[in-house]
Length: 75
Image (cartoon, rainbow, N blue to C red; front, side):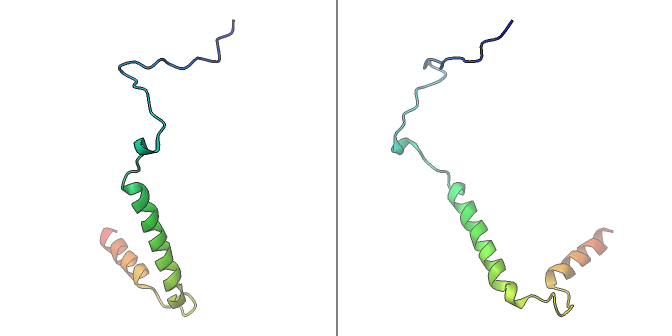
């Protein structure tokens, strides 16, 4: 026996109102624009600050120092 593979669309009812396909009914949440803008800004800051990298000199960066202090405090 085989089961039907295609089910037709459901009729609009009280639990499923008919959606309108207009531009006015489509709205973005505030975070849909804020999160990509924030990510872009952070990546831009990372690229802008990469000229001051201390990897070649052997000095430990401030972020690594903070991470080491946190590991000492936890462990």
